[in-house]
Length: 358
Image (cartoon, rainbow, N blue to C red; front, side, top):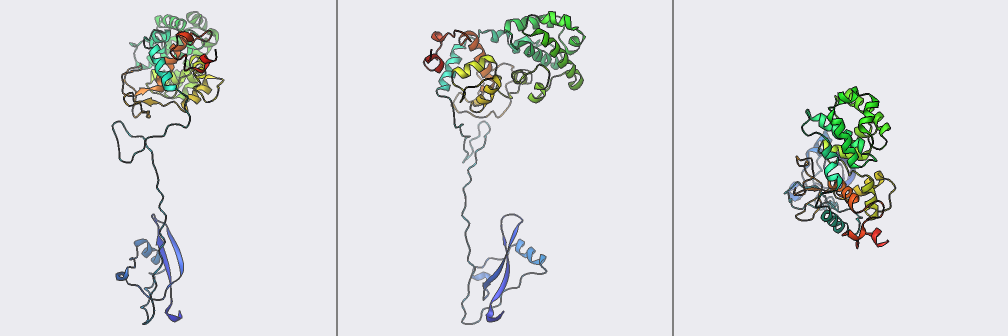
């Protein structure tokens, strides 16, 4: 163009492979790299080749004319804060701990500690006759033990632990395996499990579920909640307990009628819940999965459970989601009864909203 003005096509390289094309009047004289002009980056050069050749070097300035340099606009940097789960013993500079949920029940830690104190004797029916005690630990292979755990959970629905344990003893005396159940007629099976609640329906569910386990899982039980609840007669509470007891995996909080009742009495749900499954979802929204007893800081578990099938209170990572079922079930069996709860003997009588309302 005239008057020594040069049009240039500039490719501005932003981080990444993308180049933005800027065309227009830039300067009317060349600025050497010695004067502070940046050298072209490879992406700028490649873009020039793609257009049929490298961009032309600006002409030398005429005498008496001023040189103009392109105006650089600095992008405003944004600070990105990242929170992550650090492994045990990892401190990491700049690491931020996971934020606590926006809502938590008032005094829940004190209430939980009081329940642990009241349950320290571990003398409730669930402590001796729960699903962790109904299977044969010497049965071989391991899948037989897992099958027995699932059957004990299916029998336990709407049934006292003492009755469930008696039915399991009678079944085990005949050799409790997938094959033995399939070979047992319905009438005999009903006699063996009676008087568990809804025993006729459970005979049908046990037979159907056992046949599915043989056909689809080689006699073992599924290793996921989704597959477990798809089995006839298996609900969410049973599935989460089966995952914890049979597979050693904490998949969620197992909520039965005891946990459901106590959680609502203590106001451990933001709003009143109408079913155990609704209570489970409400509890999992705020209750930490795991806590370090040494520092009181809640963290998500970084590894698997201890080898033992039972909750180990001395383990550095106390699994709250695993612990809460047995803790509250026993508390509900002994103190926080469905009818006429023993509030006068409860350490939480001054902290419990339900007790204050009596």
